[in-house]
Image 1 (spheres, helix red, strand yellow):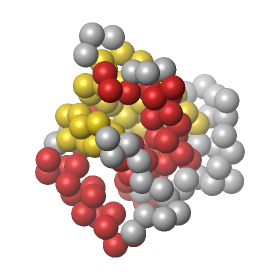
Image 2 (image 1 turned 180 degrees about the vertical axis):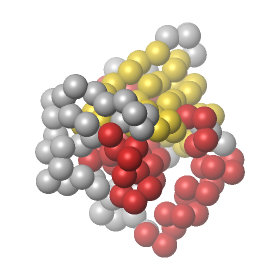
Image 3 (image 1 turned 60 degrees about the horizontal axis):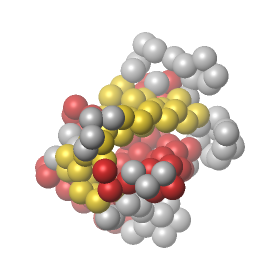
Length: 136
């Protein structure tokens, strides 16, 4: 399903929806690693803070109530600790440099502003979900 949300909320909402998939399927606590692949969104990522929105969404932060003065601190914590506390509950290894990937020259068919979350599990399996940020 495509969710029509403003472009700056799209990546945050996608992260929230991905966490919901993991929890609904009772595989949330089995996650050992995660990758985020940004497609068309990679081109405007820094300017629109797509990378930050993804990370904060995965932390379980709320885009409406988050203390904006702590955003930089939260991102720095993820970067320096090389870990991510999914939904504020489940710690996984996560390297911003190695696990947040920018596909500048690749685009998906449905819409250029796409991102894919890949979760890796204790049993060696993986789950991949793709979301599209289609604008407001």
